[in-house]
Length: 251
Image 1 (cartoon, one colour):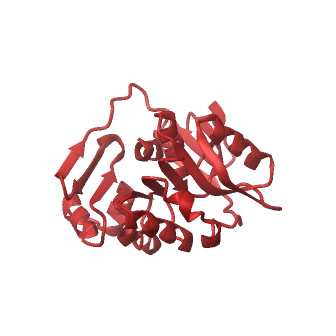
Image 2 (cartoon, rainbow, N blue to C red; image 1 turned 90 degrees about the horizontal axis):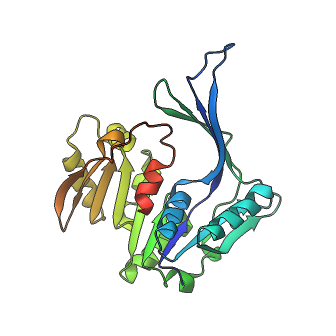
């Protein structure tokens, strides 16, 4: 049975790398392109599985070719897909991820999705209780139920807050490890010292709060170890940072 489980909504990513982002009525060179599967907690659980941990996923996909391909891909990486729900007459969420050499940045195009997220009645709590780790990236009735279930038995719940919103912050009491992005920090706590912000967030529940800081690595506070900073690994040439934070969470 899985030791780590993700509850999330996976997406299909079409990644393109350009020499620059073109202005209207102009051109840019396409350096590379790739179809990949993503989503915050979905990428994280694949990362954990590729490092040898027994993993599972509870997630909805469409009953289309992309949904079927996602099921095959999760299984190929060793992720248990018995609770991958195929939503009838629904398309799997799709995102275009653009990165460019000129700025080293990235942009995302998404039409949104009408896919129905995991519902509380779809959770097999006995299956969930077999896990030690739960990876989440959204605040829903189902994720709160799952988080509280695992915390009650001494498990670890990790939440990925890629950007600030009140809904994201409401997951603090349901989380043990809360990992937020630098965009969250700068939006929620503009100009305030990072470690002070971590401690304020820890007062609401988590034992560890971490902010990812891009090229600067990460920094955070843990009740057991106090404040810490870790540098990013040196990379000779950054091409596309899509999925970097998700991979960090899975690791």
